[in-house]
Picture 1 (cartoon, one colour):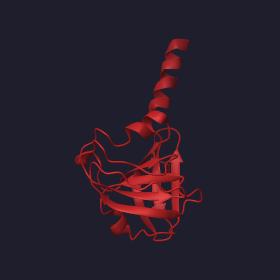
Picture 2 (spheres, one colour):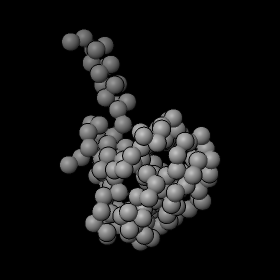
Picture 3 (spheres, one colour):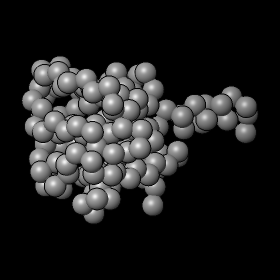
Picture 4 (cartoon, one colour):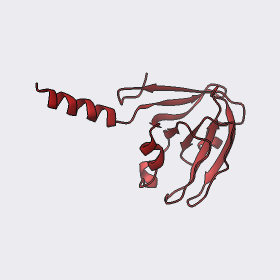
Amino acid sequence: MSSGTSAAREESTREQPRKGYAYNRTRQAFLASELTVADTHWTRFRGLLGKRRDDFTSGQGLWIVPCQGVHTVGMRFAIDVIYLDANMKVVHIEENVRPWRITPVRLSAATVIEVPPHTIWETGTTIDDVIEIHVSNNGVAAA
């Protein structure tokens, strides 16, 4: 195998988004069993832009690292937003954020999880809940 092929394979592996899950330990409920990590300038900028509502269904989520607030400018559907501090504790929630909105900036937040609308209500997630996030580096959800 040539070093060019090896370098191309390594580059394509790095481009695959990291995957995992988000679990509310306090409520014993999954927020997202298919969590995608947005932790580069490009993935945080892109977020859910260009996705359709059918592309972001129950069980899916986007973990934005670092993040203290989001917008839905250019989006086509509503989302729930869960703000987490550095200890993975919920410090703020925004339910059913419709397209073309800007959520508040929370300086106490370190990261944000975007999930489909009604996820917060369905899981009973509230302020001070503790969220467990597991992420794999190889593009496959962690077990």
